[in-house]
Length: 118
Image (cartoon, rainbow, N blue to C red; front, side, top):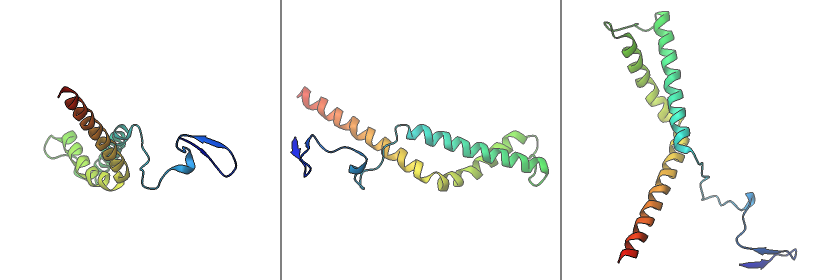
């Protein structure tokens, strides 16, 4: 497609550039799943460190029976789950958009392959 703008320059193809990004199109992040997983692990490790320090200081019980490491891990998981739900909402949404795009692409490819067989 060739068009001429008001300045007299000829453009070939659709306009691409930083000023042509539509507001409806989400910004694609190539490694959204990896980034979300790393951030989720980081939130868990931060919670584990906080829980371990609180147990060492004596604010939290250090153990239930002889299950000290298991107790601290379980408590860190319980604390980190709601924090991740709130703090990582944007990354989770980006990841779900990326996964949905990949599923749609796979469905289109499968449909194209099935139509070729017929």
